Amino acid sequence: MSAPIARESRQSAILDVLRTSPVQTQAQLAQELRRRRISATQATISRDLRELQVARVPAPGGPRYLPPAEAPDPEGRLVAALSSQLRSLEVVGSILVLRTQPGGAPVVAAALDGLGLEQVAGSVAGDDTIFVLARSPGGARSVEARINQARERGARWG
Image 1 (cartoon, rainbow, N blue to C red):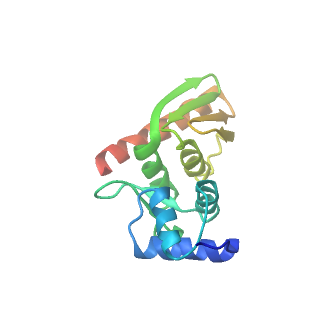
Image 2 (cartoon, rainbow, N blue to C red):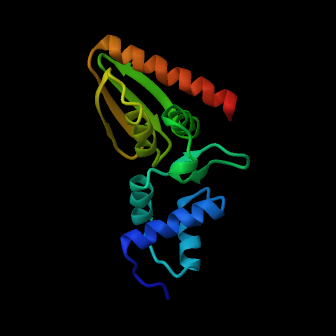
């Protein structure tokens, strides 16, 4: 039976698993943690991955999670997130509406926020939808162009 474990120890184990095994899903990660006698819910694993700034990037055989030291730069994270998660993008005035695969919005939003774009006042991510508020309609178009460029890079990369 798995025992509860302190957050720091669990997160350390997560990083160790990601460094030693190709992990494609949170379910795989949960299974690897159980093998180490660490019990964690999907919600806990998801939160840990965000806190640890783990990236999910395209790889041969399908996307995989990488620890921060092995993850691409902020632009690379955006490319990876968009190529595996983004379904559509629409600009409405100063707002960009991005639709993702279920559960993909936090990953894409974190990658976009990681760029620190001046044109972006802020973003809100749900499960599969992101609202990005640009400082102006022109700023929204500029961010749209940046996203489209990253999508094109991802299409060539993946």
